[in-house]
Amino acid sequence: MIENRPWLTFASHATLLLGIGLVALPVWMALVASTHPASAFGVGHIPLWFGDAGAETWGTVLFEEAGNGVDTPVWFMMLNSLIMALGITFGKIVISLLSAYAIVFFRFPCRNLCFWIIFMTLMLPVEVRIVPTYEVVANLDLLNSYTGLTLPLIASATATFLFRQCFLSIPGELVEAARIDGAGPWRFFFDILLPLSRTNIAALFVILFIYGWNQYLWPLLITTDDAYYTLVMSIKRMLSVTDGDIAWNQIMATTLLAMLPPVAVVIGMQKLFVKGLVDSEK
Amino acid sequence: MTDVILEKVGKTYPNGYQAIPSVDLSIEEGEFIVLVGPSGCGKSTLLRMVAGLESISTGELRIRGERMNEKEPAERDIAMVFQNYALYPHMSVYDNMAYGLKNRGIAKNLIEEKVSDVAKMLGLTELLQRKPRQLSGGQRQRVAMGRAMVRDPKVFLFDEPLSNLDAKLRVQMRVEIRQLQRKLGTTTLYVTHDQVEAMTLADRLVVLNKGKAEQIGTPMDLYNKPATPFVAAFIGSPSMNLIDATLTEQGVKISEALTLPLSHQHRGDIVWGIRPEHLEVSDEQNGDFALRIQAVESLGAETLIHGKIETESANGESMVVRLSGPHLPDVNSLMWLTAPMSHWHLFDAKTQQRL
Ligand SMILES: Nc1ncnc2c1ncn2[C@@H]1O[C@H](COP(=O)(O)OP(=O)(O)O)[C@@H](O)[C@H]1O
Ligand SMILES: [Mg+2]
Image 1 (cartoon, rainbow over the protein chains, first blue to last red):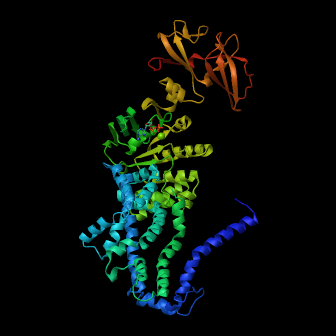
Image 2: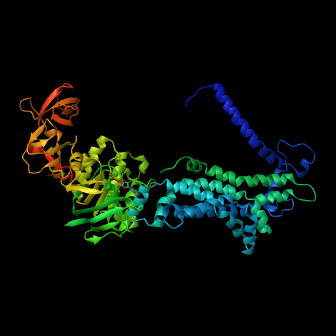
Image 3: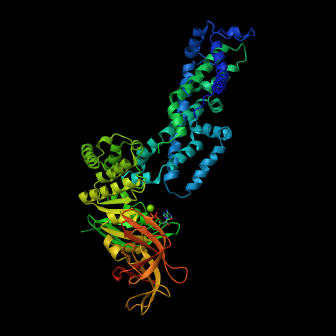
């Protein structure tokens, strides 16, 4: 579509700029706030330009302690978050790749039933089954462990469904050609199926990483040990200090740090992500 | 030496549909066999049973004397070329051709040697590093053939490999496939619905109709002596004129007014046939019957004339005449024709067998 209407260009750019402004303003304010001393917030106005306490706040938060009652440094919580997010992401991808593979390419009794049972778990996210899941995890002695943080969140109907659609779109002739070429089930999976679903895996990785990173309720419930605190849940804990003033500058710095990994993943995988959602090589 | 034997091979699909009742066929080593028939007649089913992609319901398949029914496709030593080529989209041309060899654990330098030999033969050497999507339809077709050839199999299987190409390329590839097959001497089973392709490629043809082999023979056998009206109509273009008639003492009675004299001991309903190219233009004294011309198709080298046999009653039988060279008779005019008896084909109307 080639159109040359100046006012349209102007209007669309203005809309986009306004949108960017709306999204970016809170981030900007958080960034600015993190560079002022904690006392700057009690006085009733919100600063809009950088202060001079930036280096000190960020240094403390990142390497010493996040403050407000959380005495682990942010880098350590980030590591926990990263382990949890990556564990959930890879776990989900591997499990759903395998289950979609079984459902699409193998004939076994109750195949459709299996699919529908998997599909029905869509109706049972962690929040719904949180009490029984907690009990199971507690009985297995998995409280305060990385396994406990990731395992209950790994089963994924959405990803299974996505891979099922992706596999179904692979032409039957291709599967047959591989059979004639002597590719057994594993060879077929690794040589043909995985490369063909590469972009889908990438797209899913982005979505699932953000999902995993932003987990709040579950880690809050099953970790009581500082060693397993994740970043996102700690922010909430920082807000609920009972005595004394809240050190907003530290909270803002922590929040910004919590945003960085998802942003990095999205930017890093943008190309593959869009490709995975839009087109396929088949 | 007999290479491939199909003994009473039949296929009933799990849904109960019997695609192939029973087919017997023995293929000599190096022979080029074409399975031909209209769409849905079971050609692919038969081919896929030979490939091992479809289980054999009844009967036995033997390749070089060995029973194959229970063998996996990869163990049958066959190679197949698919209609949509089925190239692995994420692999280069080289990897596409090498994949089957890699899976068999053949040494890397040997694979390299084989692939480059075949690539040279097919003119693919420059394209080896490309991905399939960077190739034209004809080139993809070649890669698919190359993938089959590097395996050096006992049997080549082709399932309508040319139907996605444009007409010109189709003719070119047809010739090329035939030359390659001659050169390699590999037994070949080739499926097509196009009778021209079938006639030009085949050492022997198998005409399939609703899963039954109507006739098996050389292209000229089938052209000169079709066993059934189905084969008669299927082989040859434009197809044979087939007219319901009755055989009486006087001869072939086509209508109340028209009987072509013939002495034959058979009596009763028959199908009388003559190919469009065997009808000859004549005049009122010597002609066997007159044709009321309805349409003329001039192709330069030949002319097809469509018409109806002129009778007292309005609805005469339709006929096509094929004349060489340009002719321009008027539509609606009469044209007298003779039908030389040596070119007649007679079939029993009930048994559909050649008389
Ligand atoms: N998997 C299947 N299940 C049931 N019927 C099938 C199946 N595959 C093919 N058929 C039927 O078998 C008949 C022959 O099919 P096919 O061999 O593909 O014909 P073609 O001669 O066109 O290649 C068709 O009527 C088709 O509908
Ligand atoms: Mg077919």
